[in-house]
Length: 525
Image (cartoon, rainbow, N blue to C red):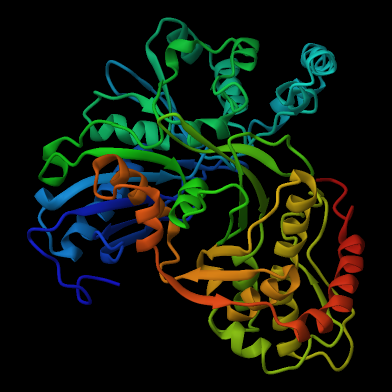
């Protein structure tokens, strides 16, 4: 929805929600009723000069961020003076280093999916010193029975962890390490650097939902992870101030947007989507289906121990309230639709629904969505993407239907893992968002197989809305989370169908057998 569909009011106030995601940077302007009155988006520009290197250029990040904000405000046809505040949502664990005095960068943004530090991580995991930390954690867990030590006893570093990429840089670049020890270097994930730039270098801050994804933060003690920070010799002086998620992050310099827009929230993209979906209570769950699938379960005021590819994160911190989430991830959902399109089975993602429903079943065909392995619930990065049980009667429509079924099956598989491992009673309605959630076929199948209602909102860009909600709460645009529930809008509600449950029980079981055939395939991974 844009300004062409809404009438803006010169006396009203508006909230900006900006999301710098992995594939898209977008800004949406919301009114008090959470309606989108203006928006703008761009595809995120990556810098990949060599294999395993995935970076963002700081100048490009700044240009794209400020451009979408300016265009969204213009699209809304409002004055900057009517903007109450801004909330910023970002892809997590992507970071940079810069000089606190000159603003010059020591490196580009190193993306969360950059894998150059993977050999370094493997060496650390195999080192005697790190194994000693694990043994110590096991002993402390035996003595104290604290979840913190149980989690630490089985922890291993991965290249996705910002702390390992930061340690790798300091270990391989003597000049940066020297500058860091001299107190000249600042560390920041995307939101921290954006706030620094927007405020003209006045604010160097982060918050728990973002920093907890870096492993620099300990979700169990709600503070810096001093054990691993000291293990790698990372100077505390480079780290930002810890704010709440909904907090005062300063004001944008008036020269940037034509007025001093207050920044009143920063948040990780998946936690932002969770907040936008109003998953405020223990047992609330949301599923974001974009390029990959992220499933977040609200675990209340306590984090859960990592299990079968699920991991605990801070959902948000607002004053004394700290909400936790257990997150699960699968890398392939939107990528499956892209493959169907590139392979010529569909001409666009929207056509998949029609093709899938032109046949009554997938005719025994099983599709395994594992272009980059199978993550949460299985944890096999060597698994391969495959079609199993191809017969002479298989048609294009069967392949499309099997592919869509597989997306629903993976959600169900991960849902069952979360339900069994966390021991938390999941509430009756699952909230869906993200582009793939446009598929009625997928959502109806999930609803029937997990025997829960599925709620699809009218705005699938929930990260923008969640960032706006968090900022608006701090600025007083909305008074409470109960008021947020009232303004969040449901577009469609899917309810379980008994006949679908009966028909798909053997199909889901057979698909599970096919998954096992796909595992342990790419042995070199």
